Image 1 (tube, one colour):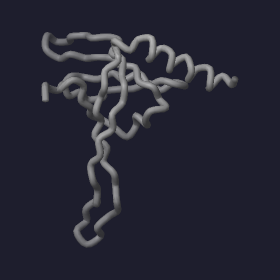
Image 2 (cartoon, rainbow, N blue to C red):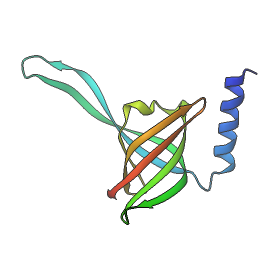
Image 3 (spheres, rainbow, N blue to C red):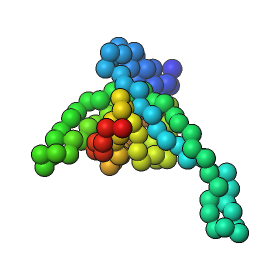
Length: 114
């Protein structure tokens, strides 16, 4: 088995073993259909993508902003396409992310309860 396959299998095992911690996030994905040259606007539609995340750290800063770090399997989606997601009715904005073989680590700030 290649190193990539070994890492992905380990990530899958971790998500299965920690299933009680796994949350489902909903990411809004804007699908670009084309460009309207007459109107000067992008033709697009919105699609929802569900991704499994594991929250690993919560930090409260300046007394009010809650920041959370999440782990996501990188095979599930391309994180660079997204900026906002919702978990259990709470909307987050992605402030930073790190991508490794098999996982993304998201640093997100809580925006509001949806």
